[in-house]
Structure formats: structure tokens, C-alpha cells
Image 1 (cartoon, rainbow, N blue to C red):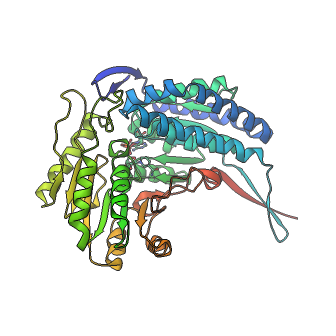
Image 2: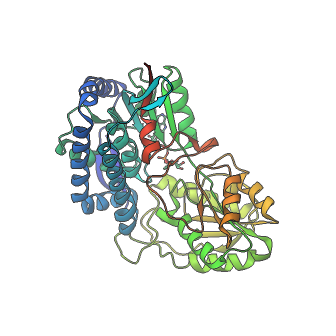
Image 3: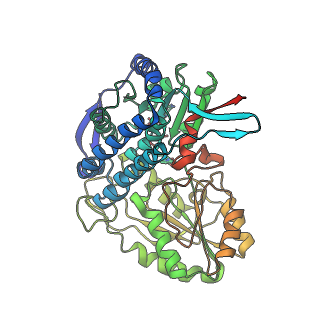
Length: 449
Ligand code: NAD
């Protein structure tokens, strides 16, 4: 059994059974057996079942938000709006996609069809446990696949609740299967199982590398959604106050445990000190505390290991000569809390500017000119998200096009749950959400007439 710990109270709130490689094989067999009948259902029928799941999830939303907050520490408003709000939007988008009839592409004398891949292995992390799951399960099921899901051992309880809702929605047994366990051996057994047709993985780059190697032995397709070290490029003509305020909020969302977080704020040399002052003032508003207290903006980190990792990076930043412009405040004695930190004058080559910290830590970096800003933005192995701020939208767009990354927000452009989501480089490959996310779970077939 694996105990699940509430990171705010350090109390055990539940436990899950760790699956063995045999458990994984049983789940894969169940998914294989269920797949042909699920794929054979008319598109409208799969849409109806997913609509029922969406309605079930909507009805269970308040309870699910509390469960997710308890298992990984997100403040309740974040849990409601993001942790549960995004999965609702994703399910809705897949229902709408299925509501439109299938239109095969025509290329000369060929018709090109998108067919289910077969059995999908979904391996997910703890930071947005339900969102990362539904981002895989909804399109996979919509396209006619069945799924074996290995949730994070840190936050596994929401997957059990989802499985109950799947059954209540009339989705047949074997279509969505949950196997709990640690990455190794359970996740590894799943990734390397010959009965899997596609592994869709979200998590760290280190684990993603291992998953891809295991899948390669069976020539199994892989999609990897990995870490990030995204740059928020604030150009010299930008509204600095708005750019810094939104930038801090983006970096600290979910206590900094967001793969797309803009953890590097790039500012013109001449405006560095002004930006630091604004960022410190903004960070001071992020009250740390009990996730169920409405005044709280930063809950605990998800685990003791994650807290220790983040504290280690904060020490490393100080040792490497970055200035602490804000931070080090008091945190509750019980719970895996970390007070937010803003580092100023950060060397873009230093460890805190290169490695993913996954906590409420912002690095402010100076640049000389636009070319230097683009160079620094691109000088990490990651490429997941990013931002550009400028009074001139075309100028911002031109900079965005030069950034090596999967998505860029201009002047605070809002998150679009239908836009393709994913990275390049060490941030992985493959895309989730919207039509691109649906396509990820299909195989292309050309029929010549
Ligand atoms: P993690 O890599 O430790 O674990 C992710 C999942 O992989 C867990 O279910 C874990 O049990 C499993 N796993 C670990 N080792 C494995 C192995 N050898 N074989 C098979 N499965 C294995 O990541 P985490 O700590 O849970 O999550 C944080 C990381 O996830 C961060 O790096 C973050 O950036 C990344 N992330 C990326 C995205 C994205 O969409 N790009 C989204 C959220 C999180």
C-alpha cells in the first residue's frame, strides 16, 4: 500500500494499492479486450457517454476540488478554477469535436482516415492530477481507444474518483483502467508492456527519457509532456507594471508547481531595478497558508521531497551570487510550505536559471537589447511556454516567432484550452488539447480509390 499524505497537515488521508507488473498485465488485457467494441460504437454514442462523464464531473466538482486540494495542497480557489475547471473544459471540447461528423481528408485519389491507436498507457504527475489525466483520457476515449492509467503516487485519489464517474457515465468496464504504483516498477512495467500501442507521459524529463527508452523496445509510439524553464520577455516599450504583475502571478500559480510557469523574467538592463521593486511588491501579496483559508494564495508544496528540493535550489541561488529581492518569510510550522522568493540580477547561465525548480521562485534576468533577450530566452534545454510584452503587438509577435518553445502568450493573452499544448527539446514532443490533442491519439490510414 502507498499512503497519501495531505501536505498541509502531514496527515495520512488515504492509501492506494501498489500494482505489480502482473497487475499491469491484467489491466492491459482488460483494455485490449474492451477496445474493439468501444471503437465500434457510433461516434455519437461515444459522445453521449463522454457528455454524461462531463455532467458527472460537473456535479462532483466541489467535492473533487477538495479532494485534489487535500492530496496535493492547491488553495481551494485554484483547485476549483484550474484543477477541476480545465478537465471540464477538455471534456466539453471532445464532446463538441465528436458532435461534428468525421470528414476524411482527400488527397488526390486517397482518402485519409484517423483511426484509434488501440490501447493507450497514460502516466501522469501530481501537480494537476485530474487535468493531466483528462487531457489524455478524454481525447483517447473520444478517438476510440481504451486506456490504462498510472497516476502519480503522490496524488492518486482523484483518479479513483474519476474511475467511479466513468462507470456512472455508462462507459463499459475495461475502457478506463487505473493501476496505482510508483514509477518503478509499476509505471516502467506499463511503459514497456508489449500490449500498449501509445504511451502518453506527463512528468519530469528524467522519467520521460526512461519511458521513451522502454517503449522503444516495442516500437511503441510515445508522447512526452515534460518540464519547462519558460521565459517572460518584457520588451523596453512594455507596460512594466502589468507585465511584472501578471508575470509573478504566472510564476507562482499552484505554488510554482506548473510546467509552463514563466520562471525567468527577462527585463531590459535600464529597467531592472524598477522591475525588481515591482516584483517584490507583487510577491508580498502572496499569503502562504492553509489551502482552505480564503486568504491563502500559496498552499504547501505537494510533498516533503518537493519542499526540500525547492529549498535546496533557493540556497544554491544565494551561493551562486543572485540577490534575494524578496523572500524568506515565515511559514506555518506544520506542512510542506516554502515562502516565495524573488531573485534579482540572476546570471542566465546559473543553475537556478537553467534547471526546473517547481516552486514559488522567480529569477529576474537583465538583457542588453532585443537580440540578447531572444538569445537568453532560447538558452535552456527546455522549450515549453513563454511570454512577450510590448506596446507594439507586431514587434511582440516577431519576438514570439523567434522563441524556441511550444507556446507564447503576448501581453497576457489568456490560456486557450483548444490550442495545441506541448513542447520542444527537453520539454518533450507531442501535443495535447483541442483538435491537435485528439489527433495525437489517432493513427492515420490512407485508402486509395
Ligand atoms: P515524475 O517524472 O517524477 O513522475 C511523473 C509520473 O511518472 C508519475 O506517475 C511517476 O510515478 C511516473 N514515473 C516516474 N518514473 C518512471 C519510470 N521510470 N517509468 C515509468 N513511469 C515513471 O514527475 P512529477 O514529479 O510527478 O511531476 C513534476 C514534473 O512533471 C515536472 O518536471 C513538471 O514540469 C512536469 N510536468 C509537465 C507537464 C507538461 O504538460 N509538459 C505538466 C505537468 C507537469
